[in-house]
Length: 497
Image (tube, rainbow, N blue to C red; front, side, top):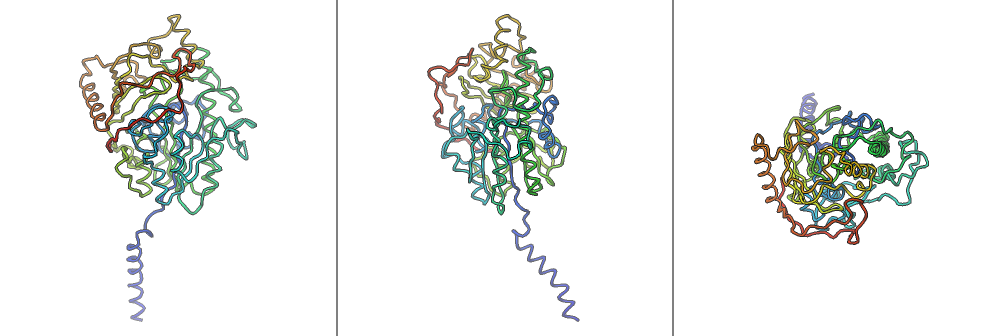
């Protein structure tokens, strides 16, 4: 009897001590991670972020189930530099791939290969804009197939039946998720081609109507602009259908509960004064995070976040030490406390993208400071946007003198070397306060912060910038066009910015 009583007391104690001594037994499972990257989606162009003219039921559902970030920013409003920055957790000028079409150099460290070394299965599917060497960082890479693929059940998405999924670039997303090894945690880099130009009618069964388009003040309200925006909305909806396919597959496999889903865009909408600029319309991204049990549904975060922070955040959640090469900060504390402050400011840069470009900016929660090292040139949008319905209409109105001052930004030169905006009072950044003495303190603080960042990251502005490769009026290629562009010598840069 006495022996039984002792056993009853000691047995549970031994079991508890055994569990305490086994760190692995106590550790929660490492999360799967799905990173969905839209191509040229403006931060406000979905129902989740306030534009209910765009049909995005799945993106909206994702936001309701997780956290919407209202002040999230990319490091460059240009496709491949932004993606290389996300993968390496480094500022574009520190990656050697700061210009469009430059491949990521072999010596750059990305978070995908660190996850892979830690036991994760890693795969990328869709648009590939990082160069050949970056593919070795993943167990599997399936680029958007030029021949096109159809989902086994086209009705799962909003893609029009019979329409090739190649334009969307999302045709392999679900297939990769289905083919993953089931015994390992996984990371998926799912990259769309939507809503990148060029646009064609008929990309979704029920197109958007031009009269429903939301016109920002820096674009003229004309039939051409409305038609262009409606076609852009159509591609956003097509992307939304594939987002829904991925969310549905996670549910079918029963793994949604332990999967962190991150949704964002690589830069702003491909319209004048948006993509390739340092205004919020170019660098602000529609970041959404869903992780059941870890992120409260229908939550919002208004703190500053940079996409340079994604790499160290994912690594920390996976139990992997990021290392000193990563310059971002772990923003996962915001998942449980959206009021926590991870950073006081974000920084971004503007480099060659079809045209000569050299600019830098720093943004606090309220103010934005831009330094234009290419002020002698107009703020020309990407070449495909120059060829668009919108820009052609704007050129005609310019010639007639019918554009408002806010709508002439893409044509005026020289431009101001310095720009300062109060985002609380002027969210579209239309009133430059750089010469306003009442804001001299804010100008001085942000000017110093930008200079300090430049010194810390060895940001050297070249005195021989890459020249234009397209005509600024027509968007036609010039004889000197080079693609892919060679990588440039890069600065080492320090972490923690």
